[in-house]
Length: 307
Length: 271
Image 1: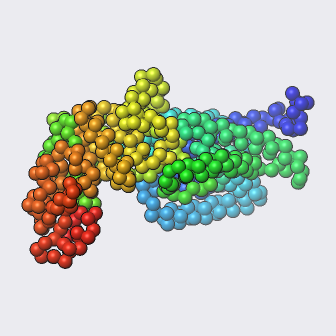
Image 2: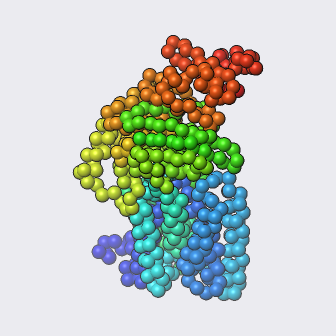
Image 3: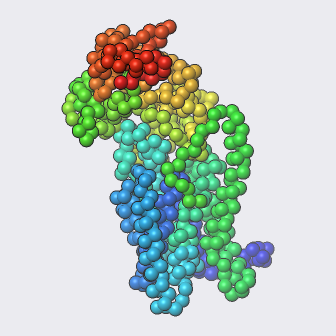
């Protein structure tokens, strides 16, 4: 096999421990973000995902500064962010975007300080790249159990909440009329989103995490009309982009400038973006026909989509 | 089936509902008529147990309503926009009506499928059951929302302005469908509207809301100049035009306004 696929898989790809971890963690992150992301897109909460990216940057860089694993920083930062969002009421009202924007700006400012202190102390720029753009090849095997645990928690939460969450997403009023505690369901979902964003951050970086959260899900929504199928599709797209990105990043050690691999996150995000564009092609043709047949229905999104 | 007794609702000292009382029997088709801001949506929220009251009580099937939600009460909310890309087929939304309050992922079963089919058939929605809900027309969406509410076999069905934004033909079809459901399945239907005319032929009973107060009875008992004038607190006229009803404010203190009103028959009341 190695002879046949030699041009694709560079020497040592399947022997490398770092590659094994990257493939495994990447797949987990892709599954979790795919499943959560479908609801993120349906609920029009891409902006909340983006906010987790910003605040996660602060958490991750803070963790680096005090010398603990960045995943802890992402998780803690995002949990604090989720609590803050719930208090500010990011889920219910629009109109709070000014306060949110200022808080996010301040949070990135803090991250700038943390990263500055870390890089001057260690005289490397590794921390900045790791936090902002991720580096799946440098995830230590001691973090893997925690990543697995977080993934299972998030998947369990979403699948348990599936029916009430779906109805609350379609119409909070209809859900409330059925006796569903809409607010509680929303908070639990926000928790799942916070953890999913942390998992995305550890693989492709905090500020690119939203791409993995929203991109595959948005493509999947165009490809299927059933929610569970959309989740599977989004997870599949995510895994495909992640693994192909890892292969290309590994190969890129041989590319100019030699000796330095290109970042995985660049490949993953680019693949996700291209697939999103492609998924829109058949749709656009379909919609033109649909518009002829019936009066135009308007799209409604409470917040702008990040991607 | 439904009894509302002396319900008062005040929001920040403003009276939204003022001693509202009425009764609906099983199988009765009742129109809840009132202009925007008359308290229709608040009244629905009270019946659903989503709005606390300052006084009064609501009995559903003879028992006080639950703290929140009610399996015996189906609800179709006011028109809301669904994203056309929502990955949810019409039949999925109907299925959620059956078990959305349960945790976990729905397990497909023959019984569940048959029940969804049956309800889709009942609201005449079989031909677009596999279309995304966000891409259906207003009238089609309304049928699906009705099916969603009906599949849990409620004994009382509440619909908040289901005819708003529908063209005349779709509105007529939805009203006919609801009247048939009330009659055949013995479900009490309470439907709110700001326009009385589309419901005139089919209503067994009317609850007329104005300024938070209600008058109820048959159409002949309620839609009269003396009853409505008392409700509004100033003089209104009820005009019959080719079997349609116009309710116009005025005569008396403000004759200019009255003349103005007749020129805009869609405007129900302007004081």
